[in-house]
Image (cartoon, rainbow, N blue to C red; front, side, top):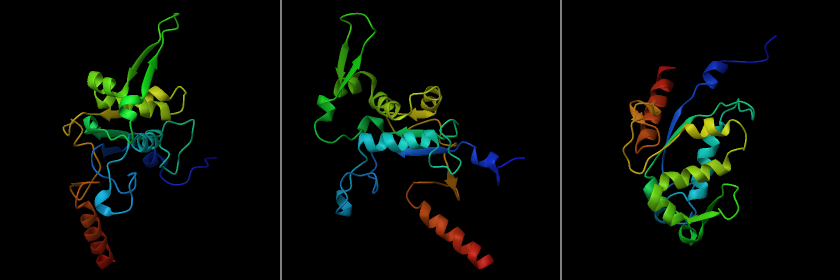
Length: 183
């Protein structure tokens, strides 16, 4: 006998989320006090939020052994925000197991060479569990240096307005008011 309740097929469906690396965010910001001092999310906070979406931990059906995560589209990766001197002091290491082959590169050089999308991808990769689902989850991360991306039609929309954009809450309120009046 099945133990599932409700529409689990709908719960397992993948949704497209849009995250901007340069837009100030009130909950992911490192500065909270005055509203005008809110900063864009720092690299670590942004990466942890993206890793949560890729794993599907925000869904009620989350299971560590099941790949039920969503797609994430990140724009403006060229303007990644880091606190302190991490941009110049954070070092990435590579080694091919041969003696004397340790290679190092700092974050600013990595951003110059490959762009901010690669830095974000490495940060998210480090926050995902080290198992066989890691590469599949990372493949659902779509990172872009600028604002343009080919996934605009896939993103979540409510009333014709993209969720998370300016004014989408007003559309939600108007639809809810119309539903209350109808009932």
